[in-house]
Length: 407
Image 1: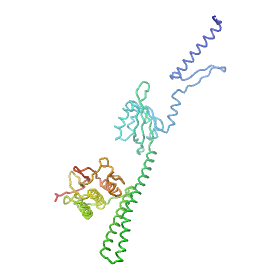
Image 2 (image 1 turned 30 degrees about the vertical axis):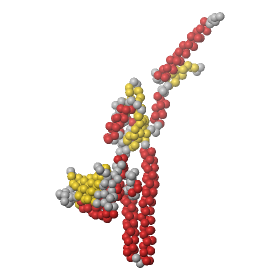
Image 3 (image 1 turned 60 degrees about the vertical axis):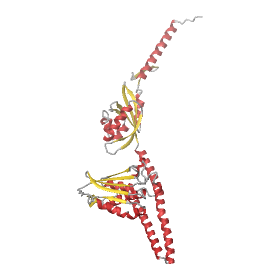
Image 4 (image 1 turned 90 degrees about the vertical axis):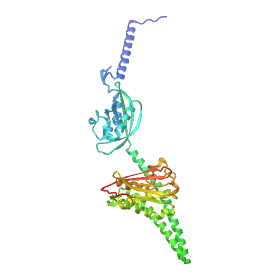
């Protein structure tokens, strides 16, 4: 059975179809961003609704973000950035857009950023990067790059996250860990001489009562040794405290570096003898330069002390020479050596190698040496000696120096 519509019914159906098609076309236009306004008919007549566009809520979101948001061309030109990024670099928006983003990082980081941009065109990537605000204070950040397509052109969307607060928290946590480690090491190291000192004082008391003057003198000597050891530990802790506050000032004067080295070697003669180490010194007659004699003696003494401690029972060689405008001091032992992964780490504060923990010590000697050497505008490094053992190399620039021939 067929149903027939009245002419008026067909007209209403055609009108509904037409309105549906118009509605679908309108929705497509809205989705594609082809229209800016929409006219809607109603009982009260026609109304005009302004379409803010699909991008408007996203623009509001981006502008309200705490993170920096940047759009880059494939060459790294800033096409757009939000206010947060402008605040990070301390420059107004109109002075950022159109510029190369590499202008806003330190010169030494620009090649790394260029490589990051090339990779960001292909795949999402994250990396830490330093921004250089107009104030000059570097700002640690994380760049999150994603490839995007802007009007058919390959581009990059970048989210820049300020890491300064996280860095401060990490530094605070590291300081707490370092403090705890320091307290553990210091308590252990100070407890040993204190225990020995207490023992010697007890023996001294008994020998005094018995009238054995030879034993009294021996106990006094041992007690003095332990007291001296505690003094050295405390002095090192004070040095570290001063270095941490930037208060370790050098008192420079014209002096002979070779004399400082010879005096440091003589100071460890008894220590070397007890460790059965033969110390062999080769040095020229005079290398004159601007030095802080006291601090440099301490730094070199720390290096020699380490060589004797870790090279006990075997020769330690110390060679000083002047070459190419530098004074070069090389201290070598034939002991346990240094694991490759620890060669640079041993100069850190409270750092000790994984195989040296049974030797005692605060892990401050080489740290102090490095700070003093660097304040003399020099350098210090550790190497493994061919055939076994370690080598510490110190280089200091010569200032108005004269070096005579070696003995």
